[in-house]
Amino acid sequence: MIFKVKLKNADKFALLSADVHEFIMNNTYLNAIGFLDNLRLHSNGYVFFQKNHPLNNGGYKNETIYLHKYIAERFVSRPESEQKLYVSIVNGNKLDCRTDNLRWVPRSIAVRNTKKTINKTGYRGVSPERDKYRAVLYKGRVKYDLGFFETAEEAAEAYNKKSEELFGKTRNLNIIGKPRNPKTG
Image 1 (cartoon, helix red, strand yellow):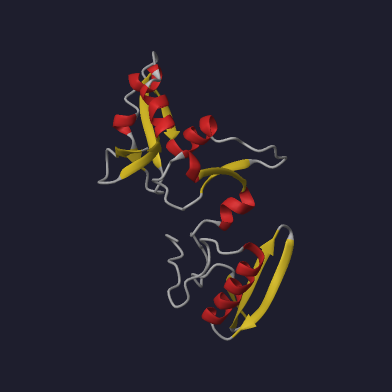
Image 2 (cartoon, rainbow, N blue to C red):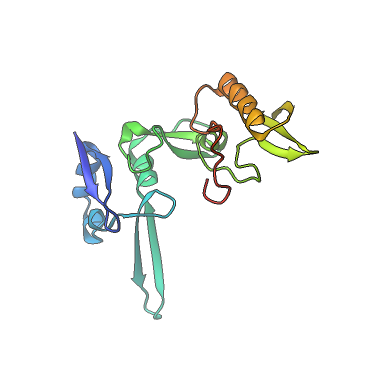
């Protein structure tokens, strides 16, 4: 069963697995702080809870809990790894926090599945150089220099082709003809 939880600051819903929903409903602390009633949509698209707790000295202690991370830490088995692991959302929908949609991955995989591109061309792996456009891709510590192209679109196509060859279909492939906004991704 999937539970939909209405977000406090948006007309959207977070999705939870039944076991997670039951855990939260039976957790004394989470109920005391009104966890489910105060989930919000962050500007980065993730679901989070935030509360300021007053301190004796007149200040405040801020508590921030990202829902996907909280769930993964308690319900998703973390593989042994020498690398630092991050929570990845399998289907790319940051509101879908069901346990079967969360996994632990190294940074290289987490980054490969992001959409944000910050460069002058708006295409991932493409940069202007000497009146042309260069396409470059990395796997591990190996650099794949795909060459120079007349247009940013041609370079982006070369990047996409090599990326699919090396990694399969990921969410970070360029959409040709529609470069991403370098500021928002």
